[in-house]
Image 1 (cartoon, rainbow, N blue to C red):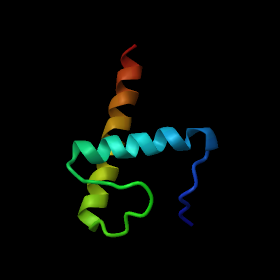
Image 2: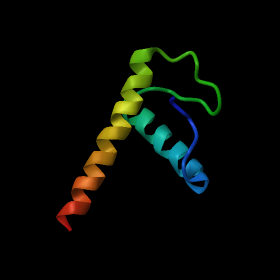
Image 3: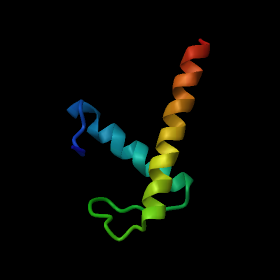
Length: 64
């Protein structure tokens, strides 16, 4: 079962900033709170950008 809860509650604010940053990078305007008016394509592009950045960060940590 899918859950939208942050595993580490202290990271919630950082994850929100990360999501807003990813949305900005792909040109999607997010507002604070409800964003149910986004298309699946827009929401997917935000999630995809977040995953891309997380993988990039992990790969960079492996180089060090």
